[in-house]
Image 1 (cartoon, rainbow over the protein chains, first blue to last red):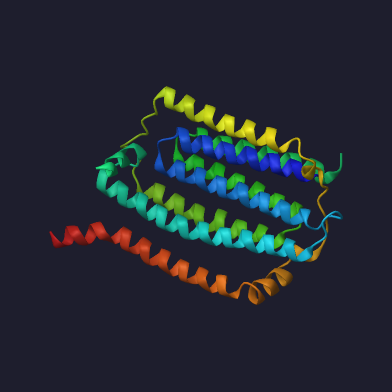
Image 2 (cartoon, rainbow over the protein chains, first blue to last red; image 1 turned 120 degrees about the horizontal axis):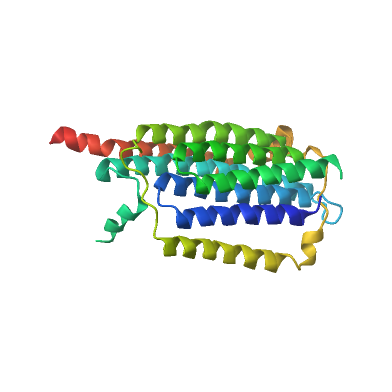
Length: 108
Length: 172
């Protein structure tokens, strides 16, 4: 399997995530799109980790480091989700809505 | 076509279909279900690439913990009372065009480089928990411990943000 297919798959998933984050107004769906983008980046990192096991660039330590990096990204994503969902719940309590346009009032 | 390739195309199609389902669904609950499909497809890719540990962690953490949290919040919020007001059609079109431009730029930039033609390595024990654990607890002990502090702070932060309103109401 050539690495380019994984690169294109990750790009496609990332761009779908960007499109969702830009076009939707529901805060939960925007948040899910951010999770989607994080996952596409994880997929690409794992693909690059396997690239370091190929005959061209044999370096097993780099491959292991890449997978550990993905593990840390998952840790940060889990922490981010807990705080983000708490913020969404607080936003719902204050405005009775989860429309991100209501966050405009943070400007003043 | 080899079995690996068939599986790759099947899982890719599943992931992209799920992602499109996430951004086009009306009800966030269906969005969560689509997103779980995407996560399972990505876990399938990990298994295909011999990263077994990450595949299991992806299912446990994302499809298990995070999606349950999302579902819990969606159940907690009454969405039928406040349906989503669709965005202005021009803003929607602008968002779609912007993401399409990003897609075109990235694909065009990466499709002509020679480095992307590298054949990926197969079959080795790198993805097994034995090797990953050894590296994690030898070279990455400090980041691992810092991540536990990060989790603690996230937990405290979530509790404080979630509780604040209640206390104010109680004091009034």
